[in-house]
Image 1 (cartoon, rainbow, N blue to C red):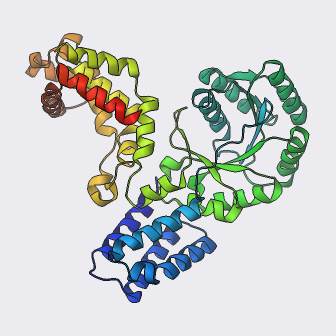
Image 2: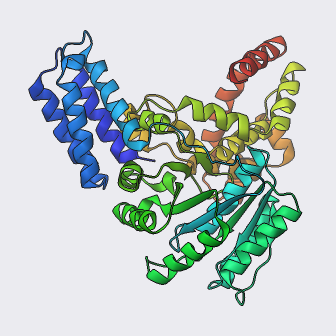
Image 3: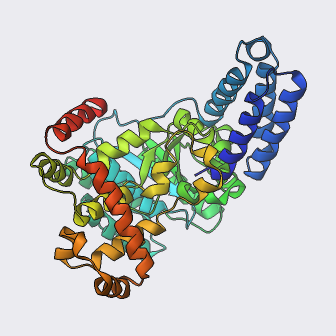
Length: 446
């Protein structure tokens, strides 16, 4: 996410902070590089102009050039302006109404709207502890109605059935009435999408909105569409009283233009971002954390939240108990750790939240999940005995495992070598040391 933009920002800031003193000339030179980076990221031109002008006014003033550490002061100015452009602070959903709180979701076809509704329903259920019902008023696509039904079952929330023969307004009203009878806290209404903005779609969305008076009207947009996403959001904001935006596919958006333009152009806050295909891959949007990632400073707070939310506590406790009893770390334990990392968004997702990753350059680009998938396949091709006693794996065993996993013998050797290194490290935490470490870790993230 924002990889290209982050690389350019980090390089520019590093070049500037490496100088003994800052002058008006070298600040302007750096800002030209920042402007180029923003143009390449497909950020809207009015946003770029305001962003650069504000940084220049502050950077050339006494607060930067007159600072004892002008490089650090410049970074702070850029950071503050990024946060300002992205929206100052996280805007939470307004659910402080008599239940059910009605959320209307709109967006173009292909933006990931229906999947996002299921992700939002799951987030409300798991994080906010709300009872949720979902309903589809997209009568033009029977497949969308069926998709929402399937997803509702997957995330274990209530589903209100609808058919293509029904009127969209009637569906929305009936769903809300049912939600009241069932004492649901929240009801989320899906609406019809189109491949592009058209008058019929907007009129229908307005009609539904006027009929149900939602507390939240959320627009779902595909961040990878760049400037087209911003233009679509602008059209929706002019036609409907939007309360917020959900950016989807942010994990695949290397440029970041949509995120940086959206709030300024529409005047509406980004409330969530979709960061993957999995049903739990939805995060609240924190401008300060995104700014930190763009500047290569990582996002430790989100990383800690991911750990608390996605780590399998039963498996973690089982491993801790095993260590306390002095038992060894085997390949099944190793595979469990690989799977846990993948559940947390993969290696790239984890690394993007660590400080300093922008300074890794090409090495940072090489970090991906392909090697971890290969390692998991190799371990799965072993017998249970081989996983528990890796020392038993000899030449003929390696050839069989390689055939079974579609890899080479060299890959088996590499895995076993890496496992031995991890095993040695884990040996340090046997018995009381493990208990002490777990206690300390628990205190840090509670």
